[in-house]
Length: 181
Image (cartoon, rainbow, N blue to C red):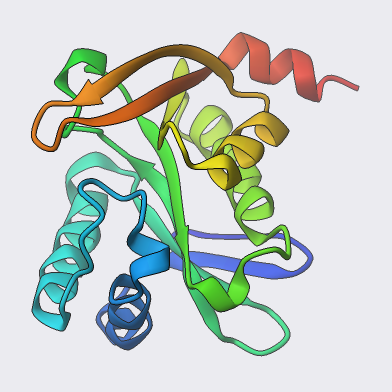
């Protein structure tokens, strides 16, 4: 079982009993506003997504982590690494992404958890480059990417939904330079 953590957060592999938290988050129009075509997901769609997220760990050796608050044990959402198959032009690539329940926005949890997952990607999984993809209007994700040192690379559209996205990236060398000393 892969476990990571920060002072405030525990990061662990997703499991079946995370469905309630994920389904609630995925049913919120504001949370889903910039995800793919902006549609909310019902419980069945969330369950299917959760099964894929759990399976990805076994196939790839990395995946998405549940983000739990150490103080309360509440599941705030997820942060992790995945292959962005929805955007073929960037492949091969590994993307860092996050989705938090709206009640947990504005506390720095996404950036804190993503920084730890990025460390895992570069230092434990020996990735050479990590990208992150956001809807061009998603200013919150842009700020998280900036805090993490990801640089804007280019703008494109997701073929399936024609949504405009910005691709950001960080190489292992850039990551190491940021974390020396």
